[in-house]
Image 1 (tube, helix red, strand yellow):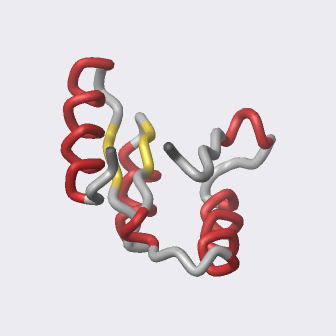
Image 2 (tube, one colour):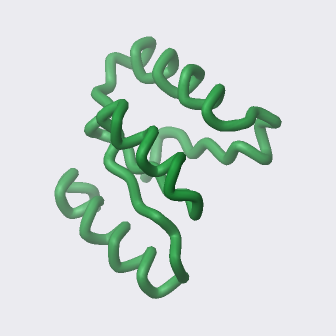
Length: 79
């Protein structure tokens, strides 16, 4: 189970400002950026998240993204 899912459209925050909020939340929860997964369709935001140490997936279709997400979650021992 995910502890927190952040959807920028739902929280009315735009990227890259949203990254600051996520980093503050992670710090508060004492969670490493490597314990997260970021998904976006725009390469500049995927790269920005990667630069912050957040594993990222560039959405290019549902099937591809599901496979990449499964792989990322397996690395986190997420079940």
